[in-house]
Amino acid sequence: MESTRSLKDRVFLVIKGLAMGAANKVPGVSGGVVAFVAGFYEEFIYSLQRVNKKALKLLLGGRFKSFYRYINGKFLFLLFLGMIISYFSVSKLLDYLIVHYELYVWSTFFGMIIGSIYYISKDFKDWNPKTIGALIIGIIVGISISFLDPAKENDNLFFVFLCGIISVSGMTLPGFSGSFILILLGNYVLLLVDSVNALYDTIADIFSGNFNFLKDQARIRMLKVLSIFTLGSVTGLVTFSHVLNYILKHYKSITMATIIGFIIGSLGVVWPWKKTIHQTLENGSQKLDSKGLPIIENYKRFLPELNSETYIAIAYILLGIFIVLALELYGRRTKRIKA
Image (cartoon, rainbow, N blue to C red):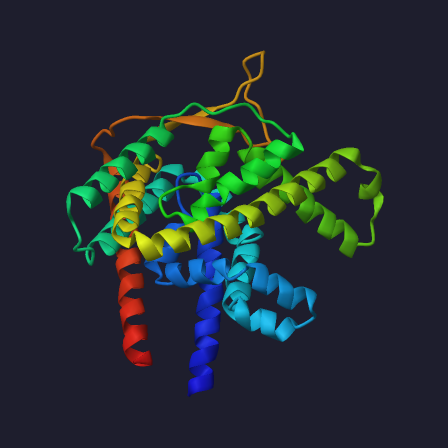
């Protein structure tokens, strides 16, 4: 029974990784919120901050089993496995759904954010002037970010490295959408669409025995960009985890209040009723990505009219709330079983 339960836990951890990976790719949605609601946020931060000097000594000393245990390797491996699978599966499906059912996808995420706010805040009792101030600051910062104008695309490798460090904040800081930050930095399409597609095409070429891509300078450039972005993301992930672990230990209430504020502020980014503004060329036509899809520049939000489409969108908002509450119920049942 114990081994079956252990296998079930491992499968669910991969599924949680899938959810985090999908959330990280959608502008406005934070993978950190998934970790928070699914109940493994603190273990995630704790495991990442174990990647330190001691871990490096164990690794360089060839003590691989000790290194694996020290960094909670099974947990991190299964979680990141789910994220990697997500980038080539679930996130591709989300790309399709956002293009064809944009309003309903945003409505579902909007509901999930509302449910997350309820989930995180319901057990938080330490309200005082400091935590209320932190909450307000978090809300203001979250809303302000959603109304910033995006920069132009920049494939300078140093800037790409910085993009990796900054964008990974969405995994470690609930309410901060890493993918939306990439839109603001101008590199969302470059780093989460074009470079990922280049990697996907390269893997397909290798398996088919076609190595002509080695002569393709554009493909090699994209792979280099993706490598530097990944390096920056890993650097940011480890760095942020150490900072957050310290803050959670010493200023937990203020940190929690700020996180709740960030998530409330992120509602401005995922507001379902918005007109997508696409990047345009000098001749006025839309700029397209490598898949022939229009490149998103920003969003113009508006209040909806009361019609059948709006009522369906509201139903999807309720569905999003229900999904989070169902996750909470599953989490509570799992804790009771383990107890």
